[in-house]
Amino acid sequence: MNRLYLDLETSPNVVLSWRVGWDIKIDCDNIIKERAIICAGYKWEGDKEASCIAWDKNQNDRVILEKVIKLLEEADEVVMHNGDKFDLPWVMARAAFHGLVLPPVKTIDTLQWARRKFNFNSNKLDYIAKYLGIGGKIKTEFGLWKEICLNYNHRALASMVDYCKRDVELLEKVYVRLAQFTAPKTHVGVLHGGEKWSSPLDGSTNVVFSKKKVTAAGTIQYQMQCKTTGKYYSINHAAHEAYKEWRAEKAKKEKKQ
Image (cartoon, rainbow, N blue to C red; front, top):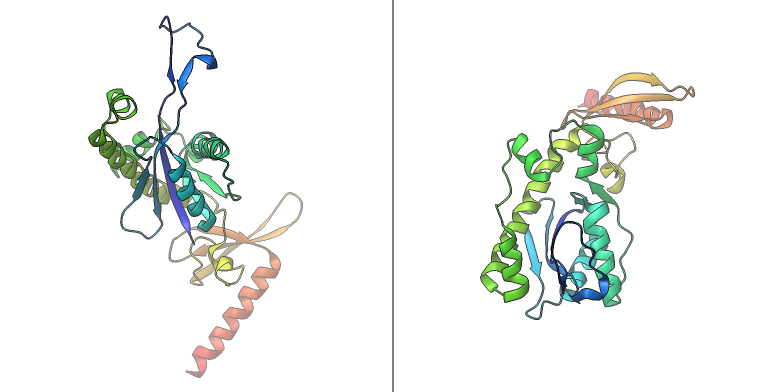
């Protein structure tokens, strides 16, 4: 499984405004510098550490987009926190700006998982990570963005890169914990040439039949459990018959030995 963990840090628009406050309207004609991607943190599942690529000395994010697109081309799944509504639309908007094209992407949004399947007090990545006892984000203030975007401060940019990499590493740990309660989007066993009855989470054949279930439409499903992960999943009748044949053949071989 080429599972990619991805997180972006972005710059705000720089605008001209005669007033400030909560109830004022600033038109897009007031923009004097368009927002962009400051850096993109990423990590392949199995890598020891996260990596990060930042915009160039002219604050051009094209190099980031080119790298991210290559990563997306290689990924079977892309895990992000609020990625469906924030990170991916940002990548698409900036790719369109630079005349680049994205490949189709299969995303997993841990924010959507948190909202739909869990009852956390907060769905922020920092809170969930702390709640699960796996750490927290590096603290930052808005001044860091001003130093980077307005003063071209290289030390501030390096701090932003560290902040982004930490977010990616937290994201992976949160995903691993929450994935135990959700159905996988990709069947890892089939992806690597295995059987449909194998564990969809890790492709393991160390699985056992748990019980038979029947849907409201009368469809028979067979609940299985992966012994390596403890996770339950369901297979259809044909896959269950293939599983029984495999078990019988395995038993014959073991008896001969």
